[in-house]
Length: 613
Image (cartoon, rainbow, N blue to C red; front, side):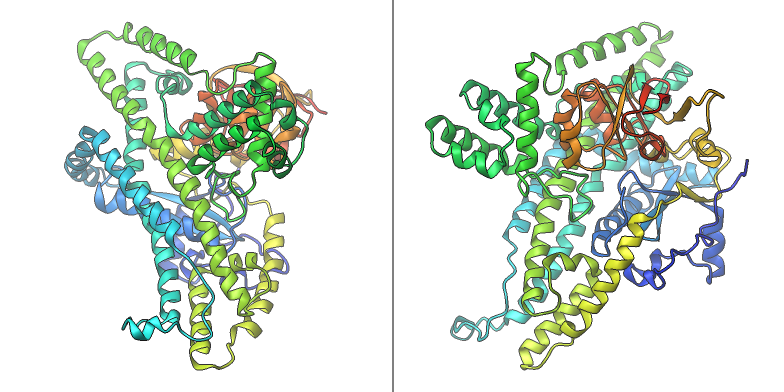
């Protein structure tokens, strides 16, 4: 078995994509022609960030990767001085992002960073609740500013108020300024995103490491149960769907919803009855903000929100109606999770031999539980609520450029880098200002058509899980708990998926996501729109899962994902719904086929294919 992955400089080009590099910033390219940078790249392990990006990036969509590239790294390296870890470096190959955590190699430097980290991180841990409330004020203020942004076509003649109110600022300048403001808001919300997040994960890692010292070889699935069952905003959208499902049953509207009509048809019929009008009023109360939740992860422009496509939450409401009428548990089994959590904690505390160890255990557990709400809630505020509104603001801007003839369809804008959009806007406003012909209409459509062809080829490419040189032992904490990149996982990636026995039974290894063992037929799901195909008792197999998929959890028996570690959002969500889960299998969606009989062990992190469909 080889001890290295393919060199990042030797990834073969996809035929017909020559010149693809110009779709992305130059510094995202692997740099074979730069000796110093190339030597660094060869020495590092670069793993595909399928946790966040199960699809290739349209040029504009890279904005969120750029945003967290900066925000995470500067907080680790320059603000809090995380002792063992610097930032995370990023590259792009065939539209797919690869990342490498940069550690602190010198033990003495690690030691020098500790006092600063303890002082600064300690301030946040000690004042967490107050600072988090301040955070919500800041983010809600930014959401209000985002909602207020409006993009309109440039006028044939400026309104006379520009003259008689002595404003002195023209519409061309204002259009450019609004675009800059929109982009800066997007980058700013990600600064807020990482104000707490690294510290939240650090608290998890400290808890895991302390517990492992006291209880050697304690399963990570046991430790994660000790921070489950805590109330967070991220589960509110699904709770609202459960509420609406119960209201529909109570008001005799359940059959109307179950008749598989479109959301628009259902709402039209409901508007004709008193009970229906009441339900629609309750729907409107739920929509803002709780339907600002992406049908995917929120990272891509085409991950529409529930508010953009009401057919999706209506289908989920029907799932809840069916489950309620069948007498099943809907929503999170919170009380059960809390009882199990407290019993588990007490059981392990009673086994601790010294007061010092018990005090250390109690302290790190308390901090891990305190940070838990933020580690999940930021996801709703940023990746879902903010992103959902942001994408639609960019579409408004695109309408301006479509109206000016720069391209044909508002969805074409995603094929431009954000800097290129500003160049196009400058072209537009200067030609408008001077009364001449803009260059953009004859330039951009040809370029966009070419880029569409590139993106189609990127979609068909299967990115290797890793490139470069793996370390002897993976020690970087976030890679382990968030991405699920461990020493054993890398070994599995190096050897590929192999038969576990000579009988055709295959086994995949991943990370324990949520406790339990279960067998069932697999259902491979690529998007939220396919969730309606799930049958009772099936095993959901996906690249990753989204919190917006929670209504489907009333049907499934367990879940398997390609990516993620024990503290990734998919693992956390599945734990909160009591579903045995294995995350980070690497190739679950390509190895397992719909209809295969599989057994998943959420404690061991194994998935066994018992029978092929």
